[in-house]
Amino acid sequence: MNRLKNKVAIITGAGRGIGKAIALAMAEEGAAVVVNDAVAETAKSTSEEIVRLDSRAFPFAGDITDFDVARELIQTAVTRFGGLDILVNNAGLFVSGKAWEMTEQDWDKCIAVSLRGSFNCSRHACGIMKERGWGRIINATSPARLGQPEASAYAAAKAGLVGFTISLAMELGQYGITCNAYSPLARTAMAFSQEALERHRRRYEAGWVTKEFYEKMINPPPPESVAPMIVYLATNEASRINGQVFDIQGSDISINAGTSEKKTIHKKKGFWTLEELIDIVPKQLSESFIIRVM
Picture 1: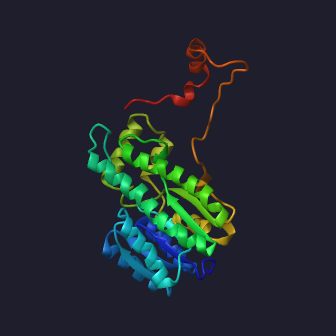
Picture 2: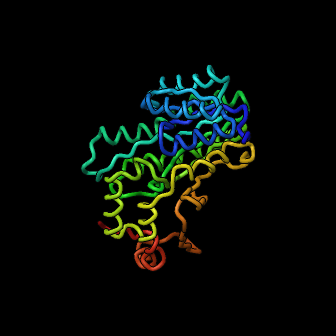
Picture 3: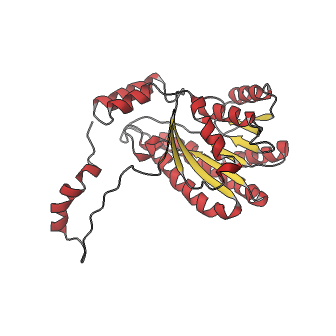
C-alpha cells in the first residue's frame, strides 16, 4: 500500500467517475493528491474522501483550458506538498453531433478541455519533473481516437492526445520521465447517460459496431476497474514503459496505439501506376477501408 509513498500527484477531472477512482487509488498507495475539477463541490468531496483514508489531499477547482489556471494548479502541488511527480490528464468533454450540425463553439470547447487542457498542465509540469529527474505523465484518450460517428470533435481531441503522448515520451524519456495514455471503458455519467445509450443503439443498428462491442458499451465495468493500471504506470516498476497506449475494458487490458491490423501492398520494381492501383487495391486492401454508411 506504499508504492507511491512520498510522491505527489495531480489528477484532473477527479471530482467523479474515473478521475475520482484514480485519485483514491493513488492516495491508497501513499501519494499526496491535488484533486482538480471544474466544479468546486466535487473537487472538495473527493479530497475529503481521501483525507478520511488518512491520506493527504487538496482540492483545486479551476478550468485547465486557461493556461494561467493550469500553471496555478501545478504550482499548488509544489506549494502544498513540496513538488510534483505524477500528472494524470484525465479531464475531458464529450460533444455529440454530426459534423455539419456542430457549432464552432462546441468544437472549440471539446478540443480545449481534452487536448489544450492536457497540454497546459503538461507544459507547466515538465520543468518541475525535469529538475527532479523523475516523473509520470498519463493522458486519457478514448476508443473514439480511431473515429466515431456523431463525435468528430471528441475523436479529433482524443486522437491528438495519442500523438501528444508519444511526442512527450520521446522528448522527456532522457530525463527519467515517462508519458503514456489510457483508453478506458467504464460506467461514468458521460458514458452512461440516456443520450449516450441512444447513440450506442443507433450505431449498432446502423452496422457501425458489432453486437459484442455494443453490449460492452451498454454494460460497462465500474470506474474502479480502470484505476489499478493507471497507478501501475505511475510506479517505479513501470519505468521502462513509455509512449504506449493502453485500452482498459474491465478485466481486459491491451496495448494498442493504432489499428489492430495493417495491410501492405508491395511492388518489387518501380512505383504503382493508377491502372495497377485500380486493379489491385479492391482485391488486397478493400477490407481495411470499408466504412459503412448510417
